[in-house]
Length: 460
Image 1 (cartoon, rainbow, N blue to C red):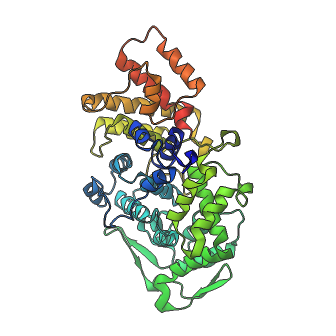
Image 2 (cartoon, one colour; image 1 turned 180 degrees about the vertical axis):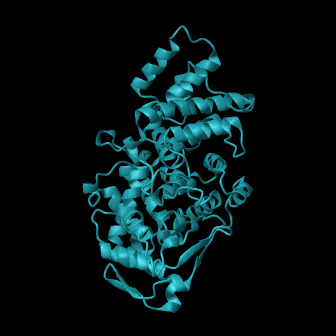
Image 3 (tube, rainbow, N blue to C red; image 1 turned 90 degrees about the horizontal axis):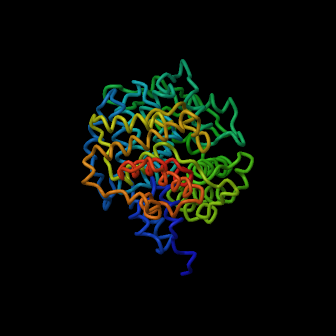
């Protein structure tokens, strides 16, 4: 084993910062100098929820309760933020957030909170499994069927929304666009017949609402068999994923993963970017559509591990990532019960630009520099402030104290970084040299906010 095989502090900071809601000082101590591949593998759960040997999540009862909720979206948001903070499998939860963005569905009253929580668990179940299974699950997911008008899609009134987004946003993309408007209309006919019981929150196939004609999508025929109609949507998924031997769809998925976890890829370079190509191959190899293999390939890849800032191979982290990382560093809870501090932290995350369960459109949230505007940048300062206020108000004597304000090396370690850049170090020293700042806890609060809004912490 060579030195290059061992994790550096920069490796720990980047891996956890991009794929596990941020590192802590304890993570740095645990993995610095250990095999990098072992660190990557440690983030993968033994299997999806329900697998024997998994560490149970501490607040699973709350999720079950929330599945019966109608309209308290704030409670659901706080529950998920704290789950991200405390889960024993942060990579799985980070992928759940990614798929929530990819299959962007928003709480609107209908779908209600319970449906959003049910979808959330479905995303978690398939987050590192088979994309084929995930795509099939989303086509008949109750929240998705309501959100994209799938329940209005029937033989006498075809609604194309779900079919269009399935091809454009969920599976094939538009570069290159391999499907036509006719393919969309034919796919919409495949998806006719599904309704949702808003009381039981279950999707049901109604044969009388289904178009039993033979359809042609991407040059392949399906349908025409009433007995197989309830599973016709699965045949649609198979046709879409198999198109062009799976190259188009796997490349689109790999592109989305690299955009989310690695670096911006110009659309004109999707077909040639080496990381995208290797992740795409890993996903489609053998026809498995194995997301676990694709994600592992990405995280172990030299192009991902050794990010090149000169090539713009860094990403601005999302508000949810910053919120969860800050709460992990401080050791504070974001209880789903209605407390003032949890409300303020949740609201600040939304003002910074990202409210879980309420993406702005079917296209999801922005990425990279799209996260930053004058308003959302101020929101990021406010978010860090609200997190430290929560620390001050949650019996802080129970938690590990922040480092002494003068010890900048300890502050970098405590916040899960490999160190501070020269410019950030200078700004922090300028603040500490200000004679008007004397109270130590105030200094620590200000350092937390300044580090938390610095490029070192926000861009990885």
